Image (cartoon, rainbow, N blue to C red):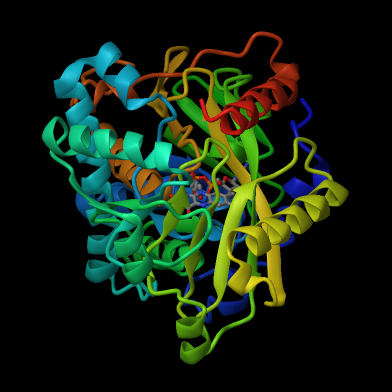
Length: 454
Ligand SMILES: Cc1cc2nc3c(=O)[nH]c(=O)nc-3n(C[C@H](O)[C@H](O)[C@H](O)COP(=O)(O)OP(=O)(O)OC[C@H]3O[C@@H](n4cnc5c(N)ncnc54)[C@H](O)[C@@H]3O)c2cc1C
């Protein structure tokens, strides 16, 4: 089975040329690939936040013998190359549709769990001594027009009163003082307790913490075959094999669909790209009228996400092209730089030092998925964070660990103790080989909606 995107997106032996790779510093991981024949109670496929958080919690909180296999280095996937927004999200179902389908109580539980998930990341950082360079004290959503600001005020009211979230609204003049100025700035909404961090330092810190608590973490150990003999799973890599009674399958946008039919055709990977400028001095930044270190998105369907980095560089991320070929990526980066010059004329003269890309994961039902395979209840999974994940994947990993260790839901394939929005497996796409084409149509609709402001 061929991966959906261009092969340059799946080179596990090559790190992305990201700002994060350049500034992660030394880590104290054992860094040993799997060798020979080994066994454990729980095997984890994938060394991003989902797998690493599951490994940490299984080893630390439940004393379970756990072994994680990662195809690249730790954080090779989205977890080591994202924007570092520890913010709330995880679904593309609108708030109105969430309320209609799941009711107020379930929707409230879901949003509260997203805020808890942000706090969980902070707590792990403190408890495990991970220096992930936290910045900011909220996430801002900036209105792109007066009409968006009017809608935002209504949505803020609902979030506050129905969902119990910590939300504040800031008019255009006020946001100019606390955030920034731009012809596309028409006021903003702030959500707490979100913040920003260094994503690769966080991923490596999680892995080091899991190793310290007894988990075995093996980078450069791609699972190439998966057999089931009786009750035992056998995962094979180029250098060894791992036998386990239970498996946690992660992967999100890089999901190894070829390994198990229970996941085939269900994730919808989607490219996201990031560009980073040279550092600015504090004076330069003041002159350019930029005041906040909190992470920001704008209110469009095809939105930008952006933030200041700890050394005063500007980072901007956006959706990228449909093929994944390097030429398409170059076009995307050039388009993003033009957009920066248009949205923030004060940044038009800045040079760029880093650009890179990766895959996020959507699903047909526009919701994240946590569950057990109906075909084999000894396989647990969590994926489909819809462009979010720093908080969501960390939280999902912990919830998988809790579920697996405590059997809260008995033999059920659904985690009944979690909000309904995250339960179970997403549907398989019909003619799943056409997923990139579906994506092209979906994103064109988003562009039209932005164009006509609908
Ligand atoms: C450019 C970009 C920007 C983003 N920005 C943000 C942001 O600012 N905030 C936010 O919350 N989220 C962001 N995200 C999303 C977020 O990074 C992800 O949702 C999250 O990291 C998913 O974690 P994961 O562990 O599930 O998957 P990943 O981190 O993608 O990890 C999956 C791992 O599985 C491994 N794997 C695949 N196949 C195999 C195999 N056969 N054997 C062994 N291992 C295998 C891969 O090598 C990979 O490392 C961004 C993503 C991208 C790409």
